[in-house]
Figure 1 (tube, rainbow, N blue to C red):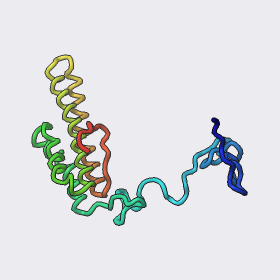
Figure 2: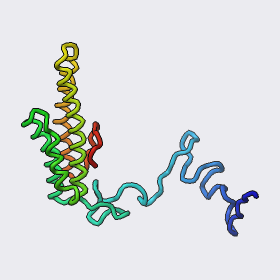
Figure 3: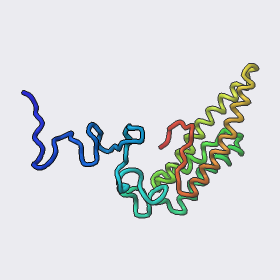
Figure 4: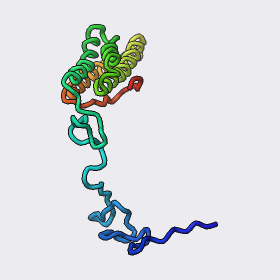
Length: 187
């Protein structure tokens, strides 16, 4: 038994025939480029992609009913989630920097998806930096690896301070910051 393609509806071109304005052999959704190649042209009208109306959606939600923009109290708690890691790092000399974001995540995990995402990102990043700090301390006790330990301490400390401040600024604008080095434990 062989399968045959049904004939096209009356008055239409056969399947695979070029549409008006399309060259023969050209894929739908592409347009001839300046060197003769084809370039993808996204659909018009913004019907695909991220929700419209701001970095975290609009007050009414995106085109698919996306999440609403975070409220002022939510952005404030997201900033606290990021900056609590810095405060804990200074107080505990880097050992408990993940406790602040973890506490904010536990409190807001069911209340606000925005705060949950910010706190989870801060916790996951701090967990990774905590492990780098442990490797640096272990390296410090071996004579040969002292230069590696110094480099790891500098990278960990500067990375935490700079990235947490950048994340706090983005959270105050209603944006979720994606940290570069995370151990994805919380989501």
